[in-house]
Length: 269
Ligand code: NAD
Image (spheres, rainbow, N blue to C red):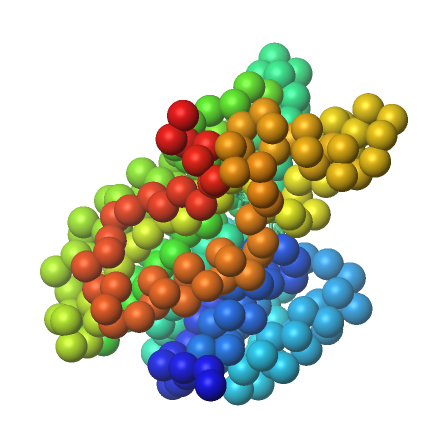
């Protein structure tokens, strides 16, 4: 039987029309939360994402179309969410992210700006808006989907690595500022990063294709894993969803300011 301990709670998951965000949105809904999704995509993709999240939980999922490069659009989304959730979301998952891999000297300035805006600044905007109400309620969870690239670097990913190190730092500051809010009984306000290694989603397709070398997609995946992820297994988006749900438990009140690798040993090397 599913434990619906998040019944009565509301959540926003950014970038949840696809990949890890969609899996987290489904997992939170499955635990009873009312979930707002956000992200780009065709109307069919958005409808499909909403239907999947509805099917996993209490229903009533809403899609917010804010483009996270635009601070004003984020503010408008957060204001609407405060009304929808009757006072502000209990769970904020900053997951949206993009990637572009070329050497530093060849990185287009527009890519740097977009990656920093989506992967880092959008979390600053959602957090500054959502966290004061979490403090008032004595319960709140901020889960930022960073990356192993928030802990170690790889070449050709300057803005991505900068944004992910940035979100780890931002999360630690917020964790300290809110650490004393609430109580064991209320669950407290915590801020953590999940730092995945390779997770099989559309985001890493170009990197798989680049390693196929005329072979199959499986060859490309094997080559990618063997470079850095010692388990030689991809993480599934659902496995990140399960960790996010655990972090929302009251028992997790003292897990804050962490950056948790889910990387098959990548950062242990
Ligand atoms: P994905 O491409 O499947 O999903 C990205 C989501 O972000 C989509 O919903 C997309 O619509 C949304 N998005 C992109 N630009 C946006 C914008 N301007 N405004 C609003 N939404 C926007 O990717 P994913 O692999 O699920 O990645 C999710 C997060 O996980 C990212 O932050 C990524 O950096 C991180 N991550 C992924 C991996 C991996 O191996 N897949 C590894 C480590 C970290």
